[in-house]
Length: 200
Image 1 (tube, one colour):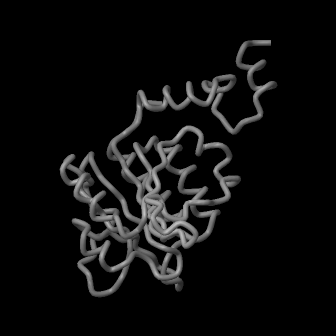
Image 2: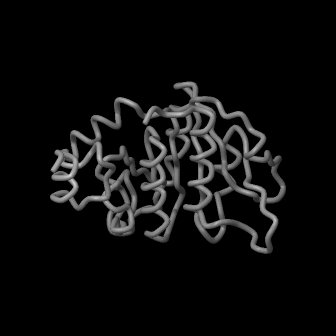
Image 3: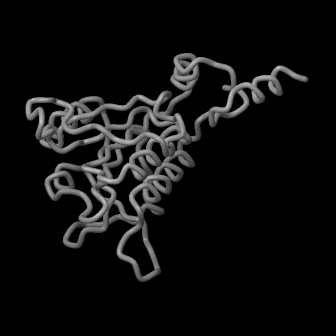
């Protein structure tokens, strides 16, 4: 048996062959050496499946950081991370290898200001009427891009849309108004990575 065969037989984690048998910290270090500049922001995502899938997407496309903008924690109103508890099972371990930050939704402007200082362009991903919409398939993203995704039922908060630099949307031809947020995240992440491929 080869070393890869042995590692696959002993390591049941959902990992590519190159990462089998490695400690979590070593996997993160290996990923850090090749990550792109994409940042994902998820506002008030209420379904754990969507949180977990977005983390898994972020790992698949080598994003730099994923930020949960959480509601305030009613049990600890002064907690700067807000209500951050979520069921991570659907992430199939990807949460161990990603840089995940938690912040309260009300603190978004501080984050936006810092990303702007770093040269990032912030994209609101939504199809809310009344705003200037840009077809995601026609946009050339800057390498330093932040993508904002909103809560499943009502989308992004208006103040986040207005604080972003541009709104992009995924054109659809069916009868439903919107895609599942984790599906939309996967599409946008894949399109960004097609413009800025990350070495495998």
